Length: 98
Image (cartoon, rainbow, N blue to C red; front, top):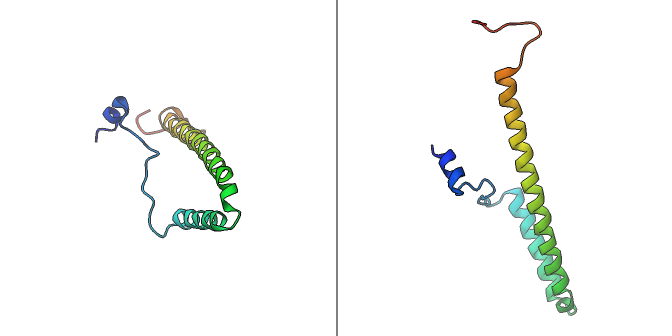
């Protein structure tokens, strides 16, 4: 395992994932694409094209912010969990050897 080395070198990308075929994510993504095609293929679709692209770009920015915040919160939780394991005390019991 070379996670620490990957992290140090900048080659650790926890957000990079492959979408599983027939997953809920894939199905929703396909519905969005279908709706976009329907709008763009309508007689007035061309006038909405710039608006759709703007919405997509802004949505990507929101998702990026959400992903980063979720990752940071997950890391904080994991570290708190580790700290609790090492430093937490029981009100009723004492570990063997303490």
